[in-house]
Image (cartoon, rainbow, N blue to C red; front, side, top):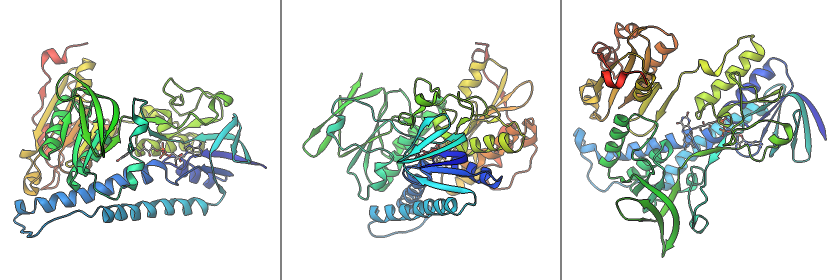
Length: 466
Ligand SMILES: Cc1cc2nc3c(=O)[nH]c(=O)nc-3n(C[C@H](O)[C@H](O)[C@H](O)COP(=O)(O)OP(=O)(O)OC[C@H]3O[C@@H](n4cnc5c(N)ncnc54)[C@H](O)[C@@H]3O)c2cc1C
């Protein structure tokens, strides 16, 4: 059976549904296709469940710290993982069903369920159905990489998806990968009560961050008793009785780590391998990401790629922004583009890291004359009052234009406070705008103007042109 539409959207992640609303609202006949869970990664196996569980872990942590605040709690404290999971499941289910019913009730929009495949540049199959349209929008997201290494099939490894079904406390969780996803799960499970070991090839965690940020993250996690195996590459797995052994290639330390469970957090790959892209002539890069231009057109006219599958972002906010860019170009005669976007994200360990723009290393590499301001969280009144003084904030400014180049706030409220910097960066206003702003006391943000009042040049050697 063939049906004709004005637009076909593949995937109901963080771009597809909002684009569907825009196109259908403009009177187009839209088909949107989902093969699994409405809402994709963010709602089902990414942001929403992890942040829900981070909140449970934070509660457990604060109960353990109660005495620091003068709160006396006699008797044992325990975490009921079944209840942690059911709280998470309820929040996820509400988002997922809300999104699904919103899409199903959308005027001019038809929902299809099943795996979509491009049969040509204008035709998509979903099971026995054939849909045609002049415009096809691909929003298929990605999935966890499962590296092919000896023994991998012999151990019941977990990924960010399958760990969502865990309703018990792993005795010892081995996490392969010290990136953003691995670190969030590491702290969360440690706070629930598991022993946790992170195995990471690089010499430091969150390897895209500056070394001072990475070191502070490591100190925070080690302080909570998380075991670190840095400069150590996991090369295979085997079983020893009930235990899983992760075999490690390393210069120092034991060549194996023994634990009860293993979580793979070694990266993500786009869901583009079973989409019929070759048949439709759509170009992908060597890692499988769909090649797009600044306005998200793929290599074939009439096809766009949005969200994680285009390799231009790896976040919910970047996927959502992709839908805004495509909608603005198609419907508003507004030439928005990906390169207008400033890098910004958070790492949701506790305290969180909020990041905007360039890292200090990137600023130094650029060779431009720059100024830097830093402030430890021990000198932020709000952090002291809350008993959460780990971390620091820093900001880099162009010495000539006075535009803010980048910032990192690793500390309590860092994920929120970073926005007062990000918005000024979008405004392309000089840093003096924030420096002279009167921020509310007592907040973390109130010390951003103070930090900006104490800028110093980056060292001559480091600031030299590359
Ligand atoms: C553990 C974890 C935590 C995260 N935390 C954060 C966070 O705190 N903040 C943040 O910004 N980002 C976070 N992310 C990243 C974020 O989840 C993704 O960047 C975001 O979901 C990408 O959205 P998307 O629309 O590109 O794809 P997805 O959300 O993955 O959606 C793609 C959809 O397409 C469907 N699909 C795929 N192929 C087909 C097909 N052939 N036919 C039909 N349907 C198909 C999939 O089933 C899926 O529903 C996290 C990710 C993980 C894994």
